[in-house]
Picture 1 (tube, rainbow, N blue to C red):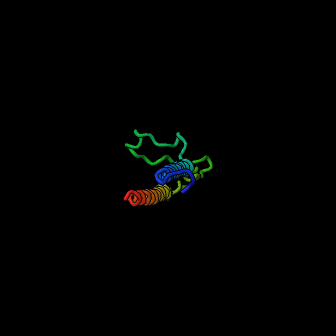
Picture 2: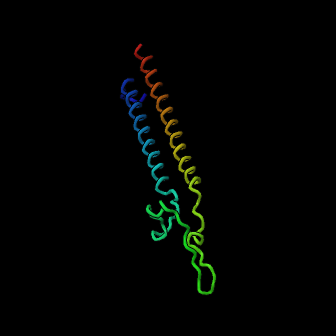
Picture 3: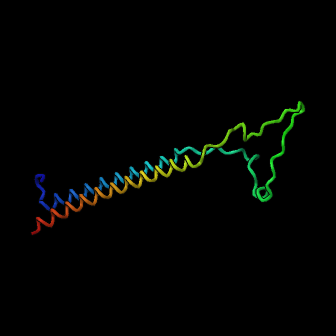
Amino acid sequence: MPRGYTEEQAEELRRLLLLRSYKDTLDKLVLQQRAQRLTAPKPLSLPASLRRRRSSSMDPKPPPERVLITGKMLPRLETLLGKPEDETDQLDESLLDALKFERDMDALRTVFETAMDQIEAKEGESRR
């Protein structure tokens, strides 16, 4: 117990320090999760001219073949860009980040609740 503090003041100081450290850690976890969301890779999208409109999606037609004067087929831009990355991989990554965040939050709550229970148990013993 620090000099000049009563037992009750020391316990209250411990509780306040514990609450403050809990809040700081919680804020850091939330900021970390937001940063992960902001830095997550975004899928490549086609130019607006190649995106299908809703009206055309009702009546799907295969894209017209582009034939050059030489007789060669002009490749579609989609094939030149390659297939977009599998969205399930990105979903899995974001899902894993969310699960890690939840796990960290659960661990933080458990540590905080255990520490508070210990402080309250000490207070209960000192009052007897």
